[in-house]
Image (tube, rainbow, N blue to C red; front, side, top):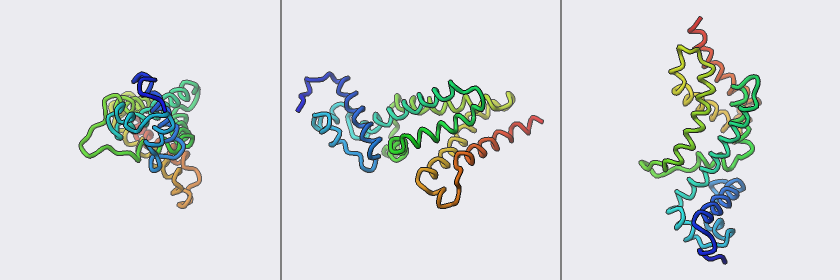
Length: 200
């Protein structure tokens, strides 16, 4: 088994997050095992908690890796768009969730204790995704309604997320909805159209 002196703290942190994220992608939050992560990298469970301080902060670090990947994917998709950017953004939301089902779901399955705030670096990662979506929505709003973009972003993210989550867990299939992405995009366009019509 490796000794703590075999790797620097930064190297250990990256090893743990890398293996932890790989396991999260494979089995999801409900079956995630910090002990298995430690075993696979050749260290004790105590080493993981020594590096991250607690199980909660270990999960936040792993989920933070998912947020990094999600933002990078969203930005790549939008960078290549020459037509309908709104469609591309909603499609990217669905596609990332489908391709990283377990890791994406873990972002919402895990909760800190009531009253405990996430570390600043995690909050920054989450805000970066919201900001990327807000920029796209702001570009679709008439200039006189640009101040509505932050609140509208939160509301429409909830709408798209709900459609995406129902698609992943099979609820939409039970309800007979066979085009959840198109339905989500329709709801987004409906909301934006209300502001466009106010201009007419």
